[in-house]
Amino acid sequence: MRIVQAVGWYYPDHAGGTEVYVAALSRRLRDAGHDVRIAAPDAAATVARTYEHDGIPVYRYPIPARPTREESQGAVAVRGTERLHAWIAEYAPDVVHMHTFVTGLGMPELRIIKQLGARAIVTTHSSSLGFVCMRGTLMRWGTELCDGVALPAKCAACVLDEHGMPRSLANAVARTPAVLARLSARIPGPLGTTLSMPDLVRRNLDLQRELLALADRFVVLTDGARQILLANGLDDAKVRVNRLGVAFEPNGPTSPAKARTRNRPVVVGYIGRFDPIKGVEVLARAVSLLAPDVPLVVEFRGAARSGAETRTLERIRMLTGGDPRVRFANFVEHREMSGVLAAYDAICCPALCFEGGPTVALEAAAVGVPVVGSRIGGLAEIVTDGVDGRLVPPGDAAALAEALTAIARDPAMIDSWRAALVRPRTMDEVAADYMAMYAGG
Picture 1 (cartoon, rainbow, N blue to C red):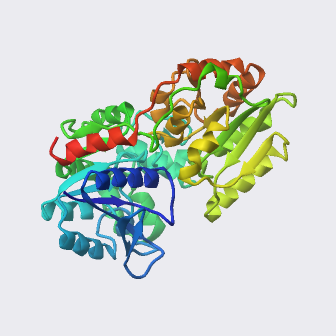
Picture 2 (picture 1 turned 90 degrees about the vertical axis):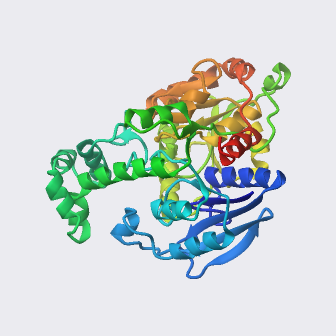
């Protein structure tokens, strides 16, 4: 079977959870005898290029670093994607598996894929769930879990709030009559974007319906995501839940003997991007609230690849104020992940968005390390609060500080959580589910 894995970013420029997932899935498909290729847009390039990653061919096609409004909103094909369309036509795949829609990989590409007669599988790794949440977090006003029901006035106000508009004004603009909002899309610049926001919400819902009509299967990572799709009146017939898995074989929970060798003081790790939606600044604020005598070490581990990530890292350093209990470490290559995780007593996943995982939580469980994190998204389905980890309201630094203080003062709590950890899924199981979908299941 000829299979294309199409993804918004890829190695070596990016190495996040989605890239790890696609690489692991591609390896398993290749090992099962399939011809697998990976395609991804590249906003930093001016020419198309092909290279290999982990023995699998990767095709990168250039797209503009500054797309137009119509390109960003998916109203037209992004310049440069015609190269992808031609590449797919030449390769003639049996299946194209799209992973999250981004600029340069969206509905125009899905339409082309179906015109060429390939089977289309779409997996949404982001909190937008396709085109449902324009804010991309499923957090109402960025602070509380949203019910996910997309309504023009409601969602337009939330997006305008995200862009800095005062909430009262955002609510007023979001109530722009439908006809006026539609006509405003013709106005160039920020004013047109602002006034047409309610119409963009409507158009996105139309795109979501078209997505489910065209895709052979639409895959989400959690039951909660599936329920949100149903709450929006979307057809359940094509929706599948395929939960995340770990890319290495789990060893199961640590034994009681190993649990007794935990660190003193307790060491909690954060591994991930320095991105505000990951809640990393919430963790920093929680650390700043800890009493001076709390016996805890918190390690922030990741790479600051962009200016925004560098600024976030600087804010973390400022918030923690040189606290000797805080340390910083470098980015972890995935092949080293299990060993790094196993050195912690617990990890912290303080996300401020409705994640499908995070994958690092599953990887931690695979080596016997429990999670303290946000009661949201996939984590709320992975962790049983007080049984094999701890969940707190997203964004609540005080609650997170209390949870960290509790395990620092009573480390036996960690031992009981370790004993209750269950074996996470593996990417072998994930791949088997996909192979059934590729075959028409």
